[in-house]
Length: 201
Image (tube, rainbow, N blue to C red):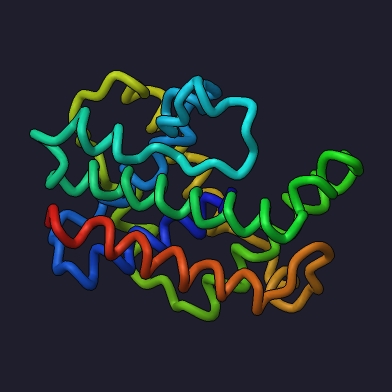
């Protein structure tokens, strides 16, 4: 799946395009699905599909369950995360990356090291003005069953720490992905998430 930093970028793009004022609240929502280890529940990945790689996240179930609250910026941020993860999962499945990762578990650490390097590269490229400050001061969220406020605020600390990187990460080479591949993913996921959220904003 995409990194915390990527999810923040995608949600902030959608927020900007839809002229949503509560920036911090939407950014919190974009982190929420990764706030616990119960990923099948938080990502609305239904039990019938648990053994089927490449099947889409059922974010329609999220929309249906929270239809009365779906226009809340937190919920729209949550929805951007689910859509972005589906884009990543589809890309990984059809490129064969998921199977390569299964055969070579050592690749997993290099995969996450690339994500750490990408924090620096994406921050420099996108000039993420205000994201850190708005996320840092975000304190409110609606009550939902899948994650607790404590879980989300613990993950928020990790997401804020992603902005504190060694400057050499900006220039250090990626090992698993290319920067062009990451940028293409962020752009594609941003547009897909915008399409999914537009009707509810």
